[in-house]
Length: 327
Image 1 (cartoon, rainbow, N blue to C red):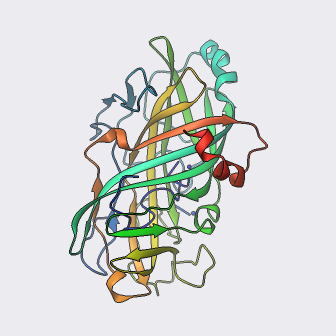
Image 2: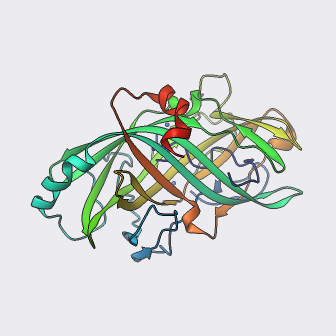
Image 3: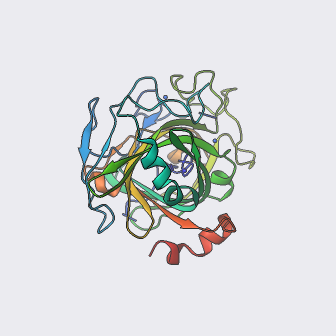
């Protein structure tokens, strides 16, 4: 999916997200009204250019520490011109016998739940914590010495409470094309670890250079498209609270994840998200502004869970059974 569209659409779908805890293809932060795009997302662990070891605190989800590879300016994964076999950062080659043994435990269909925690600077109210949760469907297949995950967005959970409430129509995540990304697995102390490569995808905008072009800040920019088909630029978030109306945004969704295969068969891990969002219009002047966003200081609050299901599960069933799938 914001694993962003469980993937691509998942992360920071609106800069005016609530203050409570719970699709094409990179740019600079901005903080002023109608200024540059805001940078958002959450970083797992201390990943600042060198490998960082990340210990999870997702209850009993990760019994061993996991690590993400060093950040790379080449943005491996699904950037423009790259497919799911685009390389991860350099690392130890997997052992074929190990891959053969673990394949039955990795390959299959999954329901996905991904959450990204940020702190946003909202006018008048100042710093506001935001936890954005999205659901998706994924399939994992074997491709030689690695695996490939195909992620499709299903639903963004409504955010209520605090200063504002945010609702995202299902047309937004479901309008994004499925995303294929490389996944590598490796042995851990008595278990199996996995790393999903970084992916870059755009939402509501078509960029010649998806990983580097600055996001539009005006709804008349010809690169913007009405992705959710509601006759407004970009994609729409419905806001209610101290200010009510609709906000039209475009995004560059960029994240990677790393974790372990746990005893019950789930894939669980932490998410490093460096997505960006730009407001390109709104139904009211008050909402037509850029909202600066930074990662939450607690990396464990940005995480992903993949629960194995049968191929018969579609988006509607995953959404209907979310309480059972992810208690």
